Image 1 (cartoon, rainbow, N blue to C red):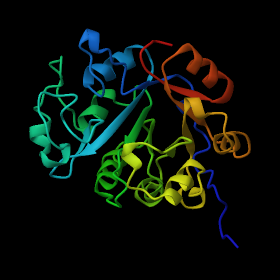
Image 2 (tube, rainbow, N blue to C red):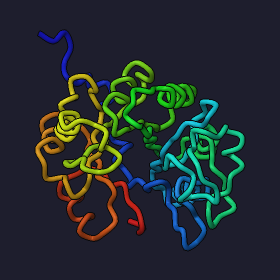
Image 3 (spheres, rainbow, N blue to C red):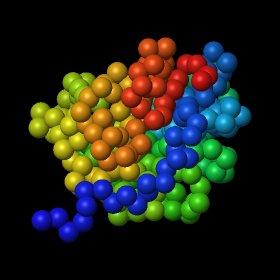
Length: 259
């Protein structure tokens, strides 16, 4: 018999998280030189009163950097793993097509200063390494009262956040199908568990963020209707996506248009 409920309901007051749409990696527009996960992208989202979703990766010296990819190649003029470069050097690297640099999570949150909600996605190689999770939790711990949540595709990270950042709401990011190269090293049982939230008893998320085209599925439906968890949808880019999200979710993480 369980000695506590499946869900703690510690963060049931998340109305602020679904009040305004959330800009995917900030309100970026490469044609205008506003690059994803940059300070200018955050400033543009704030100007539109949108929430901000960002990603964090770990530097070689253990700092949380706001950057999506594991490697520098796509977004900068350099190549190689983000994790092989120290924070000071990363913070000096310009983003392609921009004068903006790669921000630390601390600098990024300093700029936002609680003006809009922030959704921090902790990237994972699904290897059990919690160094980035610990560092992100340390940074956010000093910002009590600011509207910040964590999320991750990795249920082990969401589970760890229960202890590392108990006061910060946490969410699981998920979808129906994990047949992508990023997940090829995971066994079929792990992928099945992730697609069906079979880790729920351990991770106990406060909200769920589901791939928009997969919203009509049992797991997100039951989380929303039976458990009352806020349901985000990602990434909303098209009119069809918007219609699906409006019918089946509470919130959108959007890109490529202004809601």
